[in-house]
Image 1 (cartoon, helix red, strand yellow):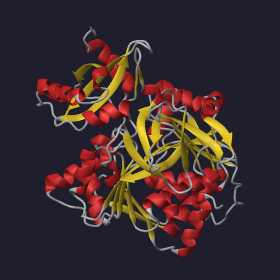
Image 2: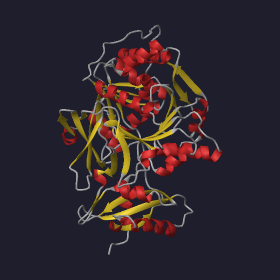
Image 3: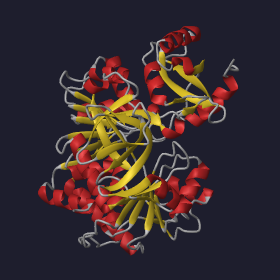
Length: 518
């Protein structure tokens, strides 16, 4: 098993002058990096870490939105045996503080703004001994991460063991405080192999999500990192996506539904198509048929639109093309598992719906400093570690996996239980509805199901939208369980993908606006 750094080194030896990374800047210019240049940057960064006193096993928080700095920083840490820690800086302050306190990092590497926040908010104040600044350092923030004159970084360390801790990545926290997922070097290798089956190993990938930039180079792809607004992806100016796709002749586009919708909408508005794109891959939330249709409208006829399902603890798990997305049934079909990954359903009911659990080489073994969470979600089996995803689902007679929503988001009523995905997927097909959220109001066991719908436009007539949704519910097997339908002015979304609904906020809103059930 080769580590990520060793894979990059091998590719740099095989194709040194091939472009591996393109940083598409906001001002319309591009920075191109070859395999040889990227490897040299990783080696020099690794040497800078060593000279700054970073040691094997040190945990180092990495906060930078610059794709070149991200890759060289993470691979530089891996090269010396340190452990990169990836956490979303846009998390609520209390949650971010808890995450960093749990990790107790010895090193903090980031842009000046990240260090300003660190010092002002006291992130990991009692733990960080080595603050290092990418880009231009400012007084009082820490040393600039740079090489001394005359150093060339021409060295390599021994290959790490597969069972060594390689990286910690925090979950999005959609159902509680984010958890630090521990990736071993074998876990990262499993992820690379699984992603190779999804993205391929040749071509140009437009990565609409920054962490994808870390894995794409070792797949052998040229990765284009567009100037996405990572704090609010759905507010990215669409031209920042369209220009690099066309200029660099991207063959694969991978992004969340919110970002893909921007790209498809911009193409439709300008009357343009994406003639080089063979595959559009959606991840981070369910891909709805209306978005798949919009994407097909701007792609060439034989191009694929694929929905990828997975989680930080096990990414990816399964994929499905738009042909399968048209399959009818309760929930949303997320296809067949990728590679050697295996899925099963635990604690299923008469309808076959239970909790999705997976095993495979890309499944993480533990949460960092969360033994109780690890014990609740992980179990040793003869097939390896079995991870309970927290998602409800089923497997049909064709071996396809169906997603029914998060276990924590079920509505527990008086004599009934509803999962979210079936009702929401149906409501999302109603003309005039942008998205819908099913939430429970009241104590578990006596909850009332409230369906909140966001209109496609502010000009939409609320009464007409509600009427159309109620008409759909009248023909739905569980439609009679819905106590009320409310029009929401703008459903709150997650910060990472802008594609998952923040149901806790929606439920609190619904309490204030719902009619008293009769």
